[in-house]
Image (spheres, rainbow, N blue to C red):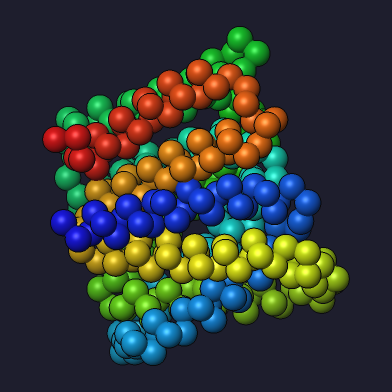
Length: 285
């Protein structure tokens, strides 16, 4: 089950990366951060591109790259705005809603199977989301918060990217594809750099250790995710990767004092969500 090892590496890297995103987004621009991350991560992918280079002749492969790249720009910008408005101990669990979207999209577009266990898992994930967003005695009150809405939008867009990436693995190696879907968004973002040069320079100057670590973690998350997707169904791999919430939430509680609220409710909700994720992936049985 080598795919499981790849997925767990991606999950650990993603959880640590969430904490750093929250640290940086408290003071920096989402646009500049997205630009710097994409450019440097594309550069970091060059050795993998050299080792795994492939050039598909099927035009549909390049359509997939284009679609994924455009979606990736939307995902990164929306995601960083969500980090600006949402505590990581809330954002990471809510991000698990992407499991619901991937499940539905995998059935619609990848003809993956529906089972009672997966449906039970989906119900658990949704129940956990309702519990963790409970606010002002309103069962769905938290869903009206800007940060929560941005997180849900990011989750949906990420789910579409997962389906596109899964299909693209029929034409590309992870090294080639990973390089392209960081390079092309970089070029798109650079086109809007004109009035944001100063804030981008300040980000590199003041936050360079975080940026460097984010690049390493970004390569790890994306490369090992693609490796896992190339070996197993998207609806099975994706939930395992989403276990990154364990690292993100407990790391957030340890680092951010202001997030130490409703801890018991958060832990219960996370346990319910993780159980649901594991049911969807079939990893509990």
